Length: 92
Image (tube, rainbow, N blue to C red; front, side, top):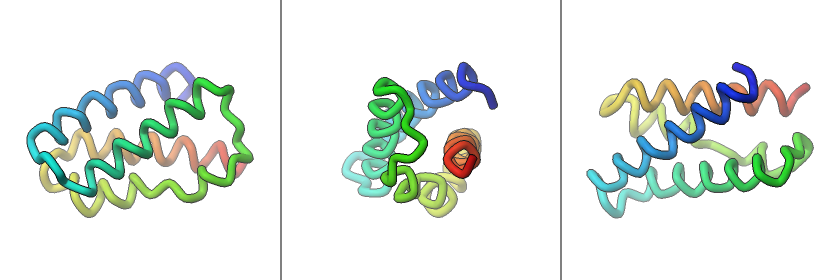
């Protein structure tokens, strides 16, 4: 995944998560994922500091496997890809 693909995936995941949130209002898992995606968007807009320790705390990929995969495999896969991109680049 390159930078442009990452940005597109992030926008698509954010939109899909918002739809998921509308279908399951008040779901704490999806709200956590949305908050993490918001952080990633802010981090992206601030210039991508790969040393930001908060990147290590992201767990939306794990949450996707536990709570979204059975409901929306496509969204879960998108979140896995974003998480993997961040993890690979963070490690160098």
